[in-house]
Image (cartoon, rainbow, N blue to C red; front, side):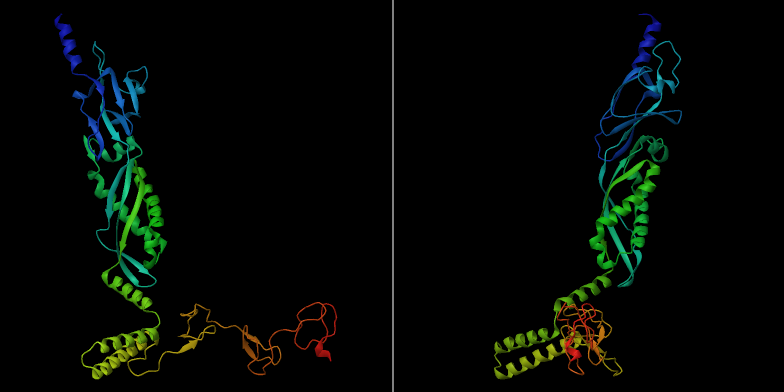
Length: 384
């Protein structure tokens, strides 16, 4: 073998003949294949597996992108040789290029959260501060665009390298979405899915310019300040308490039972009953009535429910006990014209029945005092 042949053989051995990447990590987005002096042998085999894309970069520009499959890097089946310059020597002109493998699979269970509370104007509690956290799934949708915009020339680009930037973008869009949707704080837990879908749409508008796509977005929890949560718990306790009069009776019965078990006998019984009635009376005053002002002002006005008769605060639209409508529509009496509640069967002034008379001939309802039926002309009883 001549010296020239030995030089050719040595040069050939340093060229890469098989280009592939077996990903052993769980968080690698981009991996630059180690090519000696960026020289790839003409005719080398390129193997791109599922959930991968191979990007050839020549002189700082993306020259070609290969999807999953097996390729022979030559002019016969790839356009890359028409874009890249060949090494002008007398043996298998090598291709000088960088090869980046981009992981296009979904990266799941990536975490996000608000580092500082988000201010929100709420209809029930006024200004409240919210904290939220959750998870999302991400994938590279445009390998060439991701390398141009984010990865650059990094030989090994991982999710941790972009995690903080993505979190900041997510929190910004979350704050914007929750402000626009105007969901009351008490209803947020029932709107997690709708909120997540709305935020994912907003995020992808930003991430698309980076070659990324958020495939899933989950809101796991939205928490309120402790003082607001305490107020919500107190409101729930009042709702669970129910009728104050029944609670007073329960307290009295409970005190009676304790007094019967007391060794003090009758004195203990009397004291227990007194304590039970006192506590029950206090609870009835707190939950069953609207307390007067501190300066001795008059108690708040109440009105009776037209359906069940229970007292309600003035101005209430629906009864707190039966749910009936508190607004009463008045209609005139068919006999004397006095104002009556709609649906009244008898007049409170003259005692007349409010059921309208009907024609004996055609059953048409007759106006008060009509002597003849306006439909068939039949003579009515009032004409006698």
